[in-house]
Image 1: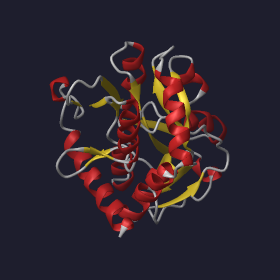
Image 2: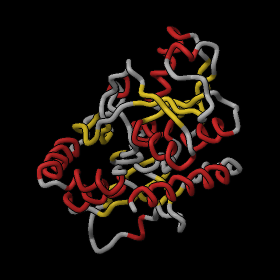
Image 3: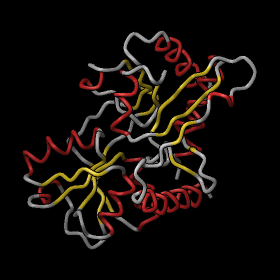
Length: 260
């Protein structure tokens, strides 16, 4: 049942990604501040709804996913009204630096490079990275990548990792706007293989009949909530994440969104 739900979400996202390629704004959507309830203070969050099952859009165009549920829990604990702005992933850190958002939850790994520009909470989820390709691909290991083209999401930790691996294994890195487009490029044979987060990759492997192998070299940091530098929310959100871990709510999110 859960597998069928995730499969339908992934399939729908691939279709939406194709449509989004024809739009100039990449599907940017902002919830109006006039939609607040009562006198609650607004908590503005930015995300990139192109990373199922962490954040994507359903058939009604609503942003859903693991990260969205987590954001709503955080807002509720803070006693604030959540406002979500959808944007391209590579614009999220700039938005935080410019003070246009209070936090970002977007499947973002807390790398040392990113920590130079934004603050991070404690990790709320940790996973690995996977290379995925079509079933008839002859690429079965890192050594097989020589001379091939690897598709990655622009601005992602996989893009950073792929650039490092390319120097050792002699392959070309092709950056694309989102993981849905990476999958499209694989299916249309415009890239030989894709490189992405394990949880996200497993959904595409299931829904698009792809195959994959785990990157044996990576040791990526976990996903965390990002904030502008010196944000007063960091400690509060850390406490909330700890509480959600201890009371089993994080485990419930993993079961809901990531369980096969």
